[in-house]
Image (cartoon, rainbow, N blue to C red):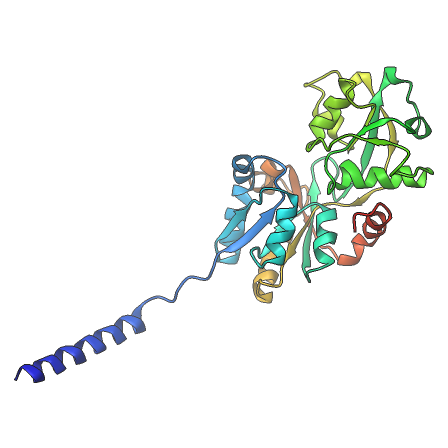
Length: 288
């Protein structure tokens, strides 16, 4: 009798488990991991990106979370290790990652000041006697970071085209890590000259007396920061993200709440070949 009851209990348990499996909701898809460069603190970046990640989550139907590595190399490592699904990085890191991983560009960002193209400048103090590029030979230079396009690579290309051997003709100071630090170093005479983004002086007008600084040279224009998809992301999901980004058209006031914190105005279509000139520049200065 007991044996029969045990069999009935086991049978009932099996039926119950089968029912639970049949009627339980399907497991949620893994989160879409968005990697970006740590150009600000993690807390600041989380705040800045929150409206965009929430927007993408709604549009795509899968949760988008921000991944912030500890340094620029961490971005490349995350993509190579399959720990990121999409990325938003500066153009140099994009071409460096693309060199070893088959990432696909999704959209090109448009900024408030520079639009979809950006360039760098070389600055010096007005009382330094530096008025033209040739005056920079032998001078102490401050750059943002090895992987900073508009705060290092663009300027090295400009100097190279002006006849400099960029490994011998200038004195490289330790990387300043931020554009603000470069401007401050030049202003305080720690550096004779520095390389920063074109709009950086305007950003710092309230911080120091930028009228004491001059622009010695302008670099060429290059495509701005791209969004890209990694091989770990399904094509249909990548297509949804591309569509969602391109709905945020440049200079549309409706985008302000989503893109305002990032100082962006929208996105436009982009092709990988648009970064070929940057590849040539990066190879010239040993960054690719």
